[in-house]
Length: 152
Image 1: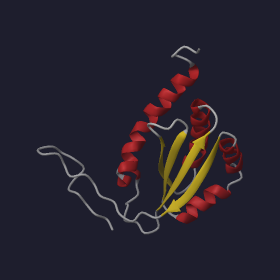
Image 2: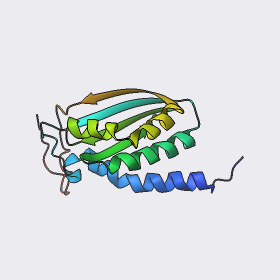
Image 3: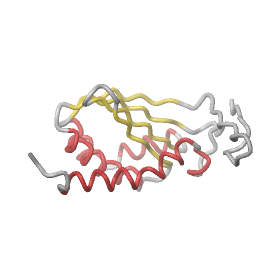
Image 4: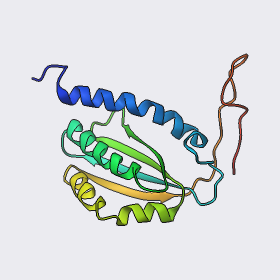
């Protein structure tokens, strides 16, 4: 049994802390520079069923994430882990447009990342266009993100 302070645990904790701010950006896509009403924006939704250790998958996914984040048109992503099903993950990746997303997949550097993930998990990838976005209303007497807004 590994001690709780292992390198992997620390890396995972550091990665989680680093990405907490990304969650806010994804939840309010404008903070990441993408107005959800932009007609060309796309959201890549990829469900993973992991057949390796969660630590290996998350570490490998983080490396893929760094590569994708360096690609033009990438806005943000969030990898979420199912609360009750070990090995079940969903990635939500926001892109300015479909062309940028497709160009990133065609980069020679992407193939090794895709192969590494396929060795650890099966996936169900799909591409979507935002159809509706609503901000939360501000809390009574507080300063929230602003009035509820439908961006259809």
